[in-house]
Length: 119
Image (cartoon, rainbow, N blue to C red):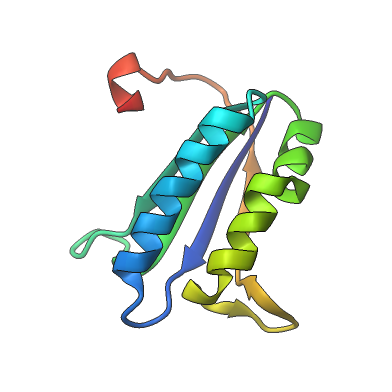
């Protein structure tokens, strides 16, 4: 199992477009990537501590393996998403058209996900 948390940042005044595109991306990943075991996308909430904002996007992802993760980021669903919607996000300084990403791999030590959380 391979788990990551990633953060992206939406450009000013593009949040509605980004939310729609990200929801469609999650549906495409579900339909086409069986080795992606969880792909949950969230936006920040005003008033949280530490502070976040609605333009902060947080991905929680679980893959069958590190190779499954690499297959996702290099595969047609994700690369097509970036080609079509990469301009909605703050860009990486040295990679035009690619969102700036803060990402980390994490190791599960316990916990659960209830079926109700899937909706």
